[in-house]
Image (cartoon, rainbow, N blue to C red; front, side):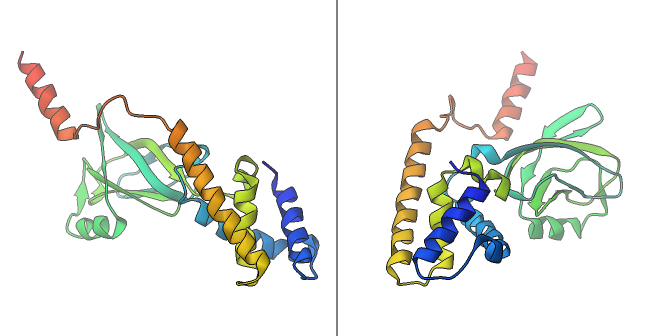
Amino acid sequence: MAGWNNIQDIVVDALVQAGQKITVVQAVGKLTRTAVAALSDIDFIIDWDLALADFSKTISEGDDSVSLSYASFKPIFCNATVGDDTYPLEFIHLTDLKAMTAAIDENKYPFKYSLAGRNIYVGPGLMAQDIVISGSYRRKLTINDIEYLPESLVIDRMLMRLLKPGTPEHIAAWSGWKEDVKRVQKAYSLTAEKRSNMTVDRRVVAFNAYLNSLE
């Protein structure tokens, strides 16, 4: 695994060998933009453990959202705490949450949440009092993550975007990318944590808890 500076050098060397007259200094902006685009593609390969992020935020009365530290990519879970009550929220797409919110003025106990960019939204409706939300999400990969990723994965995806399609160099990068993806997905499938139990619907959990309370 190589750092960002080394990746830039390797990519530029490959471009020069392909006949382009370019240096890292000349192409630093272009290389950064290409790397960001490549990371967006890499986001989808597996659930990258290195991109897991936890949060604990307060959403103020009269509001329905709060900013997160990173741009979000995938929800994991979100709990809401109102007074002494803590309970899970169900993920919903933002457009659906906004439509539901339009029909509700305020809500003391939200039951939905959504992610968009750096913001997390709860609802429907605006909060009738301050609430605390906590949980986890998967953020988007950034340039700072490159040193922890397989270097060939980043390099091949960047070269696919920088080289002329159909050239031997572009075909080689495409072939390398496909092999990189298969290798990463295979390694992940072999090491991924397996659930000790099947996921149980929270309504079933609540019903079981109620039955237990009657004993």
